[in-house]
Amino acid sequence: MHGVPRFVERLGHLLRPPASPSGPTAFPFRPLSSARMASQNSFRIEYDTFGELKVPNDKYYGAQTVRSTMNFKIGGMTERMPVPVIKAFGILKKAAADVNQEYGLDPKVASAIMKAADEVAEGKLNDHFPLVIWQTGSGTQTNMNVNEVISNRAIEMLGGELGSKKPVHPNDHVNKSQSSNDTFPTAMHIAAATEVHEVLLPGLQKLHDALNAKSKEFAQIIKIGRTHTQDAVPLTLGQEFSAYVQQVNYAMVRIKAALPRIYELAAGGTAVGTGLNTRIGFAEKVASKVAALTGLPFVTAPNKFEALAAHDALVELSGAMNTAACSLMKIANDIRFLGSGPRSGLGELILPENEPGSSIMPGKVNPTQCEALTMVAAQVMGNHVAVTIGGSNGHFELNVFKPMMIKNVLHSARLLGDASVSFTENCVVGIQANTERINKLMNESLMLVTALNPHIGYDKAAKIAKTAHKNGSTLKETAIELGYLTAEQFDEWVKPTDMLGPK
Image (cartoon, rainbow, N blue to C red):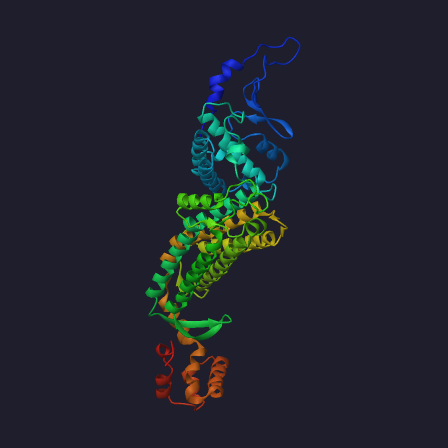
């Protein structure tokens, strides 16, 4: 983070004019640039096409950013444009400046833009991006926020005056060969792909590996299965956990399958997809440089009209995350219900005890990691609804739900990734099997009678189960009493270890 820009310290003593006898402090001259310093040196005056505005001296943004803060006072700091989007813009602006240099942009200007863009991409200038997502649906104000910050930081590097737009202009140089309509969706895709690779997929992989280890650990523990929440035939606890392993594996497969469309960048489409004000090859070169900067296989979108007017790729990615949320909801619910108790629930699993669970009930411990994960899943499902609505509302040549869509996509990716790690480290790795309880419940189950079907038929087996349930007796006692088989036959035919797979 940079303090008061150096030009303030350097020129402050030159801009202290004499006081006017008839009114407020007056300047003896008007600078040739479009910027004027305030008398208290607390702000400067900058201009956009609507007129002049006061800009804080310790900020690199300019008039258009200030105007947006005036027009969109919605939500406050918690609703600011996500930092990953800002960092992605830094990457894009650096790539664009590099390519523009090839097409004739002054190398001195291009170099300063790239250096300033690096600072944006590294998160060093985050405090200079105050805009909320609830703005123009194209993200124009955020694109201009980035252009202004990079322009003024580059100007400072070159020894110029903030707000002068000389020698680095936010539109003519930083935004050269670009439009908000193609830069914002490009930043969206860079940010989404980066978050998926850095947060979401590592988190899911960690959870997958931990569940897989538990599946192997529990491979020999036979328990009763449940369908419709009622007793069913046996399986191993390892088999039950193997379903969770496969669910998380498929979640990663689906997310990865959506990425090729995310890797397609809109840059070069400019206003409506035609590429007006760019040069032949600009789009391809920018995508190549973004790929080199990120290490991800970005390419230029084959159809820029689609890339601007629709964001089906983000809806697809959000849909994959929504499916992952469904999987995690099921997994977390199963684990908390199997661990319910400790004395009056199913109690087949012993979950880690992480913190006190009640402010009134002493000694109570709750499955809080399961609760956190299921809340995350619910939020991701809600995010997907918003993304779906936004994605379905591209009108003609431009979708204008962009900021909301990327905010929700990034939110889902971050939540799922972080929650997967938390759930793994604070719950899954510490899960223990309560074998005493598991054996008791299995041996009392009436559905072991299913093993008798091939020997005495479905109807007689059903008669045994219903009678045993009505009388409170065991299956073996009832089968013998009904005269359907002997004790030896029952022991030979009803073996849970023989009920775990095909014969």
